[in-house]
Length: 354
Image 1 (cartoon, one colour):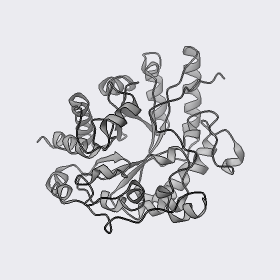
Image 2 (spheres, helix red, strand yellow):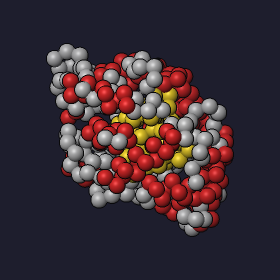
Image 3 (cartoon, rainbow, N blue to C red):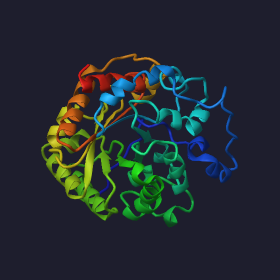
Image 4 (cartoon, rainbow, N blue to C red):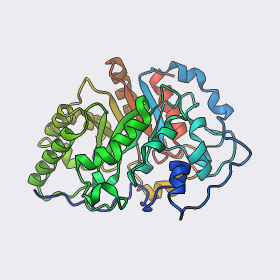
């Protein structure tokens, strides 16, 4: 079977080979002696800022089946938007989730660092203990399951290639997340990078392999598949892609990203399953590369470039899903408009009709 070629992608931060010890807690740090000791918090425990607490009425107006959140939570520039004091990225990564989860609009968060290395069950337990019972995590699966030749930890499944390997995905990614988070586990996201296919035959072969992979995964979790190839949404591929996802209990993750057509086109071409929740990510404006947007928008404390079209489409799709009784996730990145907490607030106001 011919395999797609996956070129380097600038969307994700460059992998470091090791996750931040701040994400994975004391037990993980103790097992990684090369990692630095974490900095103490500045001025006591991080709490929710008054400006965020003042959004309680807006949060109460949102449907309970709607899970809004951001991609991660460890941004020092969010002081006055989410956090009540100065704190380093390291401190926020370890201790900021409790305050983040108190934000009236945030009922979900993306766990992105697990894309670079799988996390153990105990670390998911630690994250789950910091949030309320109705909070849900969207967890990225390890990049080795969606890319060829990615090296994981030395003991990872006896060195097997993890690409679309259901055993590796189950053992190293799915079971730790589900067992650690329990009911707080939301979508488990397989985010594929851009792939170069040697023609339509290679695309069909990939779809067949993807179908086999999804079919072999444990039943129960909500699996989401996010792609970065417009050609997979062509009339020759999109119906088959949408059908194989639905048949295997998975959903497409609709994404605002320069490599993809508009959300409305994605939703139309994939013929979305009307019995499964919508999963959407507002990632990156079409006029910037990832690194460019990161440099332009840091420290992510203001809306720099508004994207009204994407906001309207997300609100429309989310409201339709709520009306249909299937629920929706919307995870927002800082690179969408400049500050994901402010983007979430404007999206929330759009959804409730303010």
